[in-house]
Amino acid sequence: MSTAPRVLDLFCCAGGAAWGYHLAGFDVDGCDIADRPRYPFPRHRGDALEYLADLIATGEIARYALVHASPPCQAGCALTVGTNASRGWGGAHTDLVAPTRELLDATGLPYVIEQPNGKAVIRKDLSLCGEMFGLDVLRHRNFELGRWATAKPAHPRHRGYVRGWRHGIYRDGPYVAAYGEGGGKATVAEMQAAMGITWTDIPEELTEAIPPAYTKWIATAFLTCRQEVFA
Image (cartoon, rainbow, N blue to C red; front, side, top):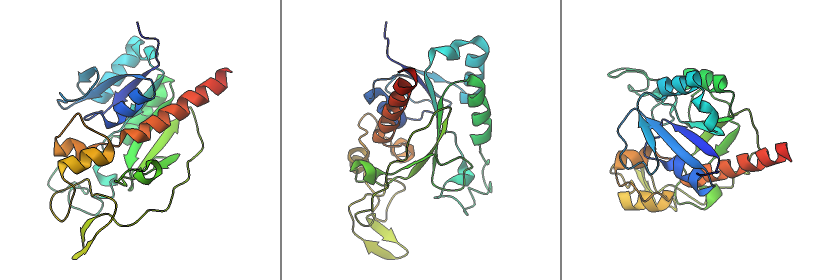
């Protein structure tokens, strides 16, 4: 039986965050409402908040050392702010950040809430980008840390532009645009290489994923913090 710390990965998508925790030494369980057959660890298919509430009610949440959640927030993403989709026109508006935090607080466990740059209402305890890890994708992400803390890493100067067309002008650069199609956007192979994700080749999963380097760093910081508390 494994003695490794275990993390619950809510709204897990294809497992970018999960793989980082795995690299840091965690056992990982995922949960997503969509079918994610390429997710590389055990997973529960279902509503993440209902699943979390059930784990709390039954006491099974106690088997976890940490909970990671990446709840959807269409209105908060920098890529959709101001668009029809973000305003709920032509589709259902989804913002699960607040109810996710409420349940995470009820677990009594340390937790991480991840969101893209934008207007989602979370504390930006950490802001990470690919340049911090020598990646060829920027993919800025913010993280709220509950019941634990760590120092913010320095944000290095970007090396140049993201390759592709912007406002009718093409710029070359060291970073690939790991979202959308056309206009110089990254190919599937380029996205996989830039983010360190090899187990899925589904474009939609790659464009939603965070590089595992981010959560490997977070997981290592958490384990260091925990060791210092119990030292």
